[in-house]
Each structure stands twice: as structure tokens, then as C-alpha cells.
Length: 341
Image 1 (cartoon, rainbow, N blue to C red):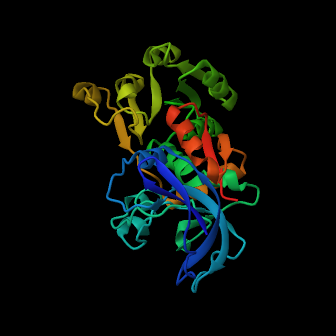
Image 2 (image 1 turned 90 degrees about the horizontal axis):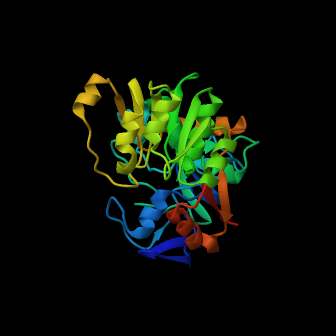
């Protein structure tokens, strides 16, 4: 069967690999329908893995597909069921997994597409408990954005920051995949959204998504605009995922007792913090990585209600390098999704 493999840094090849074995106890075989691209794919493409990996490696960390066969003991899923797939091989038995906090698994076996073979292949076998049914009115391309894009945002906004209706949120990099999802989900629950983007073109698109205020960070200091918009009060929540370039401004944008939640460090991993400011203003800072399986279910439920991911481009398997280059260039607005058929 066909698969997309990383054979060396920045060198991807479409290869013929052996099909998977039949699913075992508690497993299902899935025909992959669509794979969503993320910055984690760009990092892997550049060779920036966080752990040792063995090449060639099948890429793809976020996907959806259709169950084509089930193993013994699987009764929650059936043949023909469309599913979104959780991207980490969690143990399912540690305390965190038992409590539904799979992203804190104590014995995680790795992340697909980064440490383990990923989803960019025609078929794969995985544990049934890592698959979440897709609602009938949600398409395959949208469902492919459930595990990282919507799942990450659901976990950041609602599990960690506990964003509520009537609050004001600053979404950094509102044109990114998770930024566009954060805008839509925050507006869906009744929050006021301020967002930053890097061009006037993206500003228009962000407003069309429902953002109440859009700041072009290349022409304005976003923290000053935020203080002005909020009459010096600041925002209740900052959705931060860009790193050192926006860190200080994000903290300055918070109201007293405000919450900052971060899941990324694209512009650098080391930032300074004023401890006096931290405790005097009583900020709450949350580090957020990945999501729990229930966040996939919540994200798919929101999609079924019409809160869909923003898809910039749909590409084919043969166009993967073009897709990664577009993602790396930051010209993308929303998600790039690769279909497997």
C-alpha cells in the first residue's frame, strides 16, 4: 500500500509498504481518508524531533478515516464507522489515562508522525479506544482536524483557561490552524475576541470569522491596542502559542487575575518573566500540551453544530512538499488538509 515517508531531513517519498496485520484484541483497521498538516509536521520535516526516531518514518500526526475491520472484543465501533484518531499511543492503564487525562499518560509510547509511524498511509491498525466516532453531518476533511486542531483548542480554552461567555480573549496568530479554531470556538460560547494577524488580508479573513477586533502586529503594538480596546482593563484570557516574540506583550495584555494559556513556542523557547508582575497582578499561567480524548469528542460535537475548522487548502499526497512549504512560509490561513484517495 502507498505511504508517505520521511527518508531524511526535508526529503519525503511516496513508498510502497506492507499492509497492516489483521487487528488484534481491542484493535481496529482504518482506511485513512484525510490527514491535516501541523507545525509538528514542519518540525519533523526539518529534523527537529524531540526524541530519537528511526527513518524512514511515515508522516502525519492528525487524521480521520473509516473502520474497515475490527478485532476481537471491539463492540463500540463497527465496519463503515468514520472516526477521528487520537495521535498518541497512550497506555490506557495509568492514573492519568483512567481519569481521562490521556495527554498526561505516564507511559506514552510516542506520537504518530513524529516518533512513531504516522497516518499518511492507506491503512493502519490502532486501538479502538483511541478512535472517536465522527457525526454523520461532519465531512472527512473537517474530521481530520479534530485531534490536534480542535482538540488542542478545546483543552486550552475550556479545560485550562475555563473561558466563559461574556469574557474577553486575545487570540495570538489568529490566522493559524489553531488560531482560527480558537476564534470560532470562543465566539461560539459568547466571548469577545481580539486577535492578531500578520497582514491586512488575514485581518479581513479574521473579521469574517467573527473576531470583534483584529490587530496587524506588523504595523501596531498589539499590547497597546489591547489596553486601549479594553479601556486599560486588559483581557481575561490570552491564547498564546507563538513564543518569545509575543510573550511579554501577552502578559501585559492581561487583566488583573487574568489567565494565559500556551501550547507553542514557534518564535523561540526562552522568555523572561517579571515575578513581581506575576504575583502582584495574580496572573494564572497554564502550559497546555495536546488534548485528552474527550476533547476530540467535544470538538466533533462543535463541528456538528456548525463550528467548522477553517480549511486553507486541500492537497493530494503528491503535493505534500508544497503544503509543508506553504505552512512553513506562514502564508496559510487556517488548515492544510491532505486527502489520501
